[in-house]
Length: 261
Image 1 (cartoon, rainbow, N blue to C red):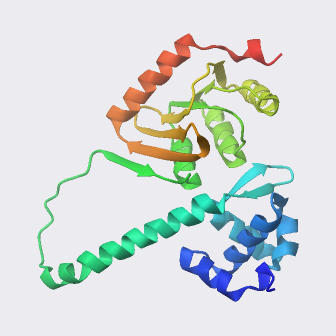
Image 2 (tube, rainbow, N blue to C red):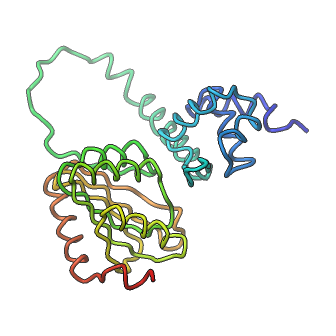
């Protein structure tokens, strides 16, 4: 029986999904052996050491992996049932749309003047977590970043961004909706840095609100927490609405210090 790392058809299929040769080898090594460190991935995948970390960065941007600890960095693959199936569904939808509409579109295409109309509200649904989307929202905060989440995972790239925001005098407020022993460690670290944190249980909803301009809302399937959808809005109205909801919960929440002694 052909071993996974020697299966040419498998790598061809991963290339079709959108991964390069090195990205495919790194992701497959993580699926087989993860969570593991970069050095372990290098040995398991056969990808050159320097190329391994480049591939990991690209996989993270594409939503195929998460970083679950920083020193040393430990990488975890996103469930293939989530990320690969979603990408294939998108490709299928795109192919069907092209087959139906694109030839006729080219046939009937005419030059038209731009109208000058500007899109003022950008709202979209995303079926997989995009690190780039979250990191951009956090990184571009100027005055206030509000976040409601369970604190069960630690995205260290986002933690680094938040550290920089605090140094730039950006106010950062967290509502923790679930308390775990592992989460208490991160909460204490954030409190020391200057993050304002309160606790209030809210089921199946997470959000990040940047100033009053941009918001990401995560809605979880209560029967399967891995099944979730992300609403991204570059909309002052939506950001204000979700910011108002955050502030409403903030007033009902209690100081986190009462729960982490």
